[in-house]
Length: 231
Length: 172
Image 1 (cartoon, helix red, strand yellow):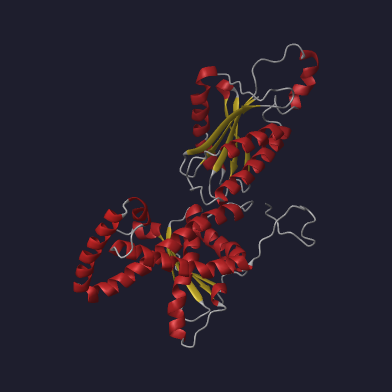
Image 2 (image 1 turned 180 degrees about the vertical axis):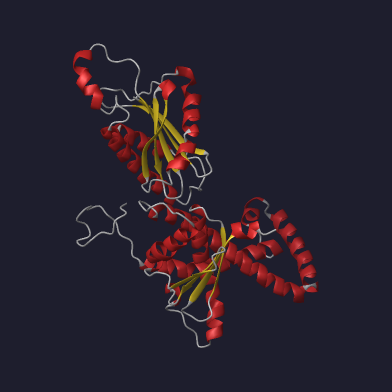
């Protein structure tokens, strides 16, 4: 493993070097969102009793399925009563479940990335330094470009704007509002990366992302110290 | 010379510690500290006491390797520090051995003044420790990249310990 970018011929310095195709990251990011959605749906179904948990299949046998059926019947009846309001609640819970999954994955990745690429860098003197490192170095490593615009209110809120967010470059739909809604979950993982990188460099923050028009993405970072300071 | 190496997290909890002795100049790689039995506690105590100094010095120096930052005169221990990006600290306590080798005292007088195992503050020692720290940092980053390692966990992997001792044998 080397921290330096290899020059062609790529195997000059280390003939045993292995290389990874950069489009693997793009493909992974694309696939992660449907994966999180599938997992959230399946977890929901297990909660509602429509699907047996994996461990029940093995050891309970007949007793298990009977128990499962009874539980399913009760839950079905209860669900039918409150179906109208619950449908909206389910959607929110489902969305939150996806967010938590993708954000947690991104968090761990961000922590690792920041340690690895903050090597030999002068000490970070304040929060703005850390955010600039994120905007320039980390964004270049992940998406091969820097953040286009950084705004701050100097009181702990930073707004990062990327006008051509790389994962969005190849996304399009005939109806642009629908496209924005569908693209929303794809922002959760980069949010997690930002949160993980900041937390490992000493800033506790919450990160939200939104997109008004593909391929633009806006990330809003709120450092928690400022929120806690207010009574 | 005996070494006590510890990796301390940003929240001041130790993640990994390793004691070893020098393998250079005929050393056998076994640590021999002055305090003997209580050296385990004393080493931890000395190293954690030097964390205050680390926190002062880190703002004056922009490098990752902070060199020699603290001494503990009663046992002639010296502490060097290496600071990783996320404020994880690698601290090395080095203590030159007490008993001079009497059998080779004639010729060792010139050797001992500059050789790594005997002189804890010479530039050669600092250079050797810097190489050691850099190598441990690479091993540490590889550990961090593994998704099975949760940040802030103790490092229990025997492979990690093996690699750190190999680095110790190579440079120190």
